[in-house]
Length: 339
Image (cartoon, rainbow, N blue to C red; front, side):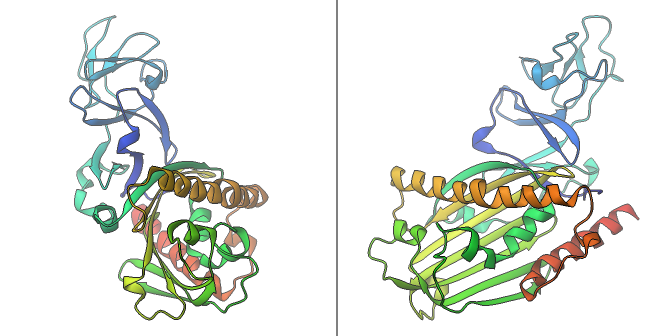
């Protein structure tokens, strides 16, 4: 399966990247990430052109990274700046990738360098909203990135897979809708009445037993999703100003055809500045995906045995509309890029 290259992808949370080289694979390409002496993020091909050694296993010398095998050093622009065995000719180089830091994320451009327009970086306005306290996380998923998108756009599975986020015994009705809005696919999950969940109870001390929930997920190609969860008293009309608001950013980068980097961030507008609440929130959200979503996705990926999902002719339900629309848009973008 080919990937969309002409796009910005999340490479690392800014807070997680330091001077220690980090090896990651994006879209099947091996990359090394690090910060230079000025703190600027650098991304180079992780493969030394001499004997194919991993540069990430080497050390930094100033702003350059040294190959651990024969000592060639490469600067942030990819050019060889030191060759212990001869001249550091300009022809000796590795690929350098364009990086931009925004919204607390290091974004990498995997396409042609001349097309790397920072204006194309997804807008994550909630990340800059002072009313929210945020926690961040990273998970490695044993599944294709489109399976993760399918999972995130399908909000109905929460009732069956996530007891921390929903009460399995809840029988109140749910309204699920989907539409396209410009370049986005929008999935909406509306419950004017539902049972209070552990997540809500942890953020709303006197929450009633029956509350209202509105969850809106927005997908933008190739693999960026922004979610707004709003909780208030049952039958509350003004959910845009709900008492409890929990935004999420789900930012995905394909590692290989069957594995994915999943960067997530969750915010809250209640109990801000309380470390114990932040840690409990982080553990609850991470546990839901790590222990419930990821095993399900990995199991499905293994059952596909290298085949494409639609080649297996899966049953499509009305709740699958948003995932189908997103897959169609990815397919169209791939065809346009390969044309």
